[in-house]
Image (cartoon, rainbow, N blue to C red; front, side):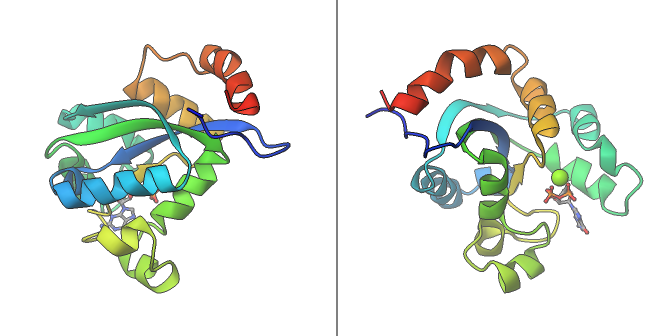
Length: 166
Ligand code: GDP
Ligand code: MG
């Protein structure tokens, strides 16, 4: 069977995930994160490696403009290659955020010791991964990274296959 089957009554959901530059730079960590994706029954729908210009980094994180960590974040996120993914499964948005763990690495180590940020995060800025936090932001962020990808069309075409498990 190529795709995981949806559990009864569950809806297929897409989320946008990023493996941030510190993790992409470290092959073993990247490998471990890929393992997590697969172990947790996410299907990788699209994936691309890219390097952000500073302006793209600023635009993506515009909601944080003015916060004390903003400049640091923007600089870091445009400092080297990262990997972006469209991931699918039921409850993809919250399941991926659960796997990431809390934003701050210190807290992640206390509250979710097996989360990606607890295991591999270096600092609150270099915290390994990103995940959309709502359906709206998932759609916005998918369009940001994969402008040619049409969420609605993909859903209409693909969801029946997930339902039957073909
Ligand atoms: P996320 O959705 O869990 O990634 O967290 P936010 O949307 O609140 O913040 C976006 C990113 O900004 C985080 O993933 C961190 O890389 C960075 N960030 C957020 N809060 C802090 C902070 O208090 N200190 C530092 N250094 N970075 C932060
Ligand atoms: Mg966020």
